[in-house]
Length: 239
Length: 229
View 1 (cartoon, each protein chain N blue to C red):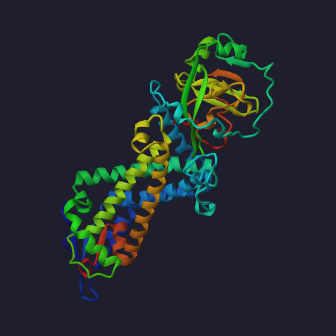
View 2 (view 1 turned 180 degrees about the vertical axis):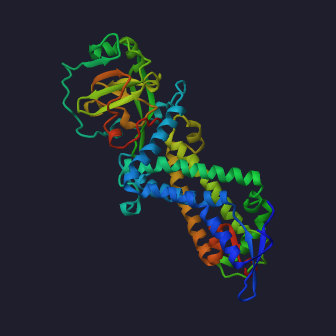
């Protein structure tokens, strides 16, 4: 524009400048009911993709002194259905299937024959609270070795006695702090905390750490992601 | 960037006014995209907060406030997280583009609050809040304005850093540690939101007080009637 102009020309210049803001209208797509769901799914998917990229297999979650532990009585009990799905410990086995050399039923004794790890780590709930607990169990990676799992497969899927289900990416599954947990505070896992066996994963949000495990499958394809994920929560939710 | 001014002749009245090009397109786009993103982040953030409206222990849980659902976005925790984890990328991207532009264009000098602006803050505060005399006009933004805009950018950066500390407390454990731990990071994230809202409130009041031409400059880039200020 020249240094001097008349009102009409100035008006057309400003109108043109205003029209340059039209990309803003694209955000309005989020207000369209039919588009909102796929857009938010894509957004969450991008966050999950970034999360998977940010995950470092060699990076350990912070561990804590015994003096930092939340008292066992104050460790929250969260489940989607019942505190105790009534598992029969005498008959309990973990049913292994999928891309493994040795599928079948595994007893708790077999899992406990693997080296026992104990760790004081932070348990973070998607709701926003967190506690520091002491957990003990076998490394999932050791168990995967025991069953001859194909660790080039992408996912581990678990089924639970309360019909909860979850899945894990392989990188997290073979992380050294990912446990098949059968102990809390050096005592056998109690029923409301997921006895006889649960996942304990300090690099994941709480809802991915399924309790009352009954089945474990190694797979390349996911049919469903997890109980909460299939309702709209993040698939990956790594911490 | 050289300042672009223009004299507009009004053919009917014969009067003429001055206009100045204040806000380049990239700044205007970032401003409005960021404003929408901030609105969504606050709304969905408050819905996320509703899931555990406390900063203490889970057991026994002491709720801080029962934030009304009608003043939150997302409907439920999962929905709010979808909004939050989608719009955070727009929030971050527009912030980064704006900052990069400001640095490389040199425009940051107009708004960056520096040490020599310090003595000018109090007279402006006295003028705005305590009916003090109006200080002589400043070239460009006044010291209080610079302080407000610089603080808003700093708060924006802190909101992202505290957010990452609570979203990724393992991968960015150093960030959570810097903020005094996971618990405090969550509290900072919440308090920074209120500080940003306080800025937005002050900003909107000033926009209303400064009138239509000032508001339009954030839409068209051009601010009319500069001389009448």
